[in-house]
Length: 143
Image (cartoon, rainbow, N blue to C red; front, top):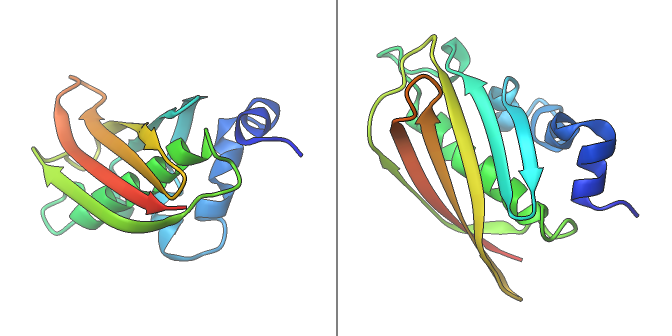
């Protein structure tokens, strides 16, 4: 059985997004999320801010931001523990500045700690243009 990293190398990192975007569920708003790299415990992604993830003010919607923390945090867990994506027990997000529609954001998820029962991640969302922090979140998952 191939692990998460092996599947990423064989099929391209974006192949790993299949479970998050192909079922037509809520996560389909992440359809334009591209995985740039996957390392052990670190996942780097990029996504345009378009109308599917924007709010009334034409900026990145808080719900989309929270979904990014969830999805990219989960991928960071999977990079070390490919058979246990876990379930969310805590997710918090601090919103620092707006990302305007038409811009591109970078998303970096890091696995902070992987225990027997819990995994802790941090996800930072920054502007691809100037590197400024847009939002940061922490995600705890029960395994």
